[in-house]
Length: 166
Image (cartoon, rainbow, N blue to C red; front, side):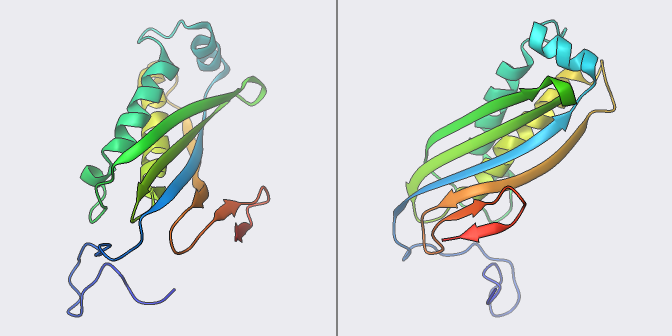
């Protein structure tokens, strides 16, 4: 684990200085799920949610959130993202929607927080747009699935939940 990088010698919170780190291509992929009622799942897939196109709004919200992560997370670097995507997988049988946020950049620090923020806000947007229909929705399993670039290299989460660092 090593030293605490967000604390100075006196224990004060500081932003990590990445000036001397190498600029590398970086990618981060995060995912999370929201469990909804079958009625909400039907309304989303049929396009009958009263507030509008849920997945379109959630996609835009996730992209905007990833781009604004430094405004939300203390000491997080502002990054010039070159690509952000938010995609959805629907599992009707389980009434589960999975959001996947992928972030790319060329820079001195990774985009894990941006991908995690994008997923979180996309799921919160689904909740917000559907809460009048189902207040029991549950957001779960927000996690980093993959990252590459920088000093620590590649990380891929294994299906069983075991991490694999290369």
